[in-house]
Structures are given as C-alpha cells and as structure tokens.
Image (cartoon, helix red, strand yellow):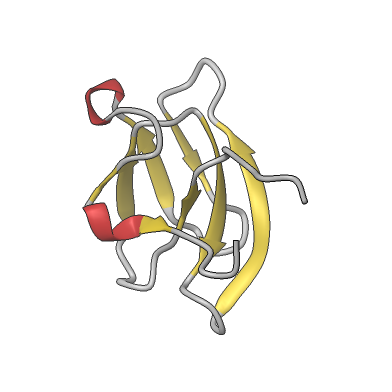
Length: 81
C-alpha cells in the first residue's frame, strides 16, 4: 500500500483564512463525514490560494514548516492511513 506525504488540511472551524507551511497540499473541507472532495491545491509562486469547494483562503507561511498550520487544528490526519 502506498503512503502519501502530501499534507492535508481541514476547516471544520469555519475560518475564512488558514496559514500553512506547504505550497502543495490537499484540502478536505470539514472533517469527515462532512468533507468535500479532497482536492489537491498548489500555491505555486503565489502566497495564497482559495479552495474552489469550501472557499477557505490558504496563505503560505514558510515559518510554519511543511505540513504545519495556524491554527494547528487545521492539520488533518487520516485515521485509516
């Protein structure tokens, strides 16, 4: 079984903006079972991107480190993985 190193972030808190330390990531929306399709997002050369499903604004912050977020509760770990 393959494992993934792409960080996943969720927004069950209903925040307008989440700071993240990764340029490539998956947005899952709210925590399952209220999630939306898990979409891969790539910020690229920009500093922010909006999820097309849940409209969460993700802003890149290199000080957070890859896979980390502000708030910390936005990091999602698949319990089945």
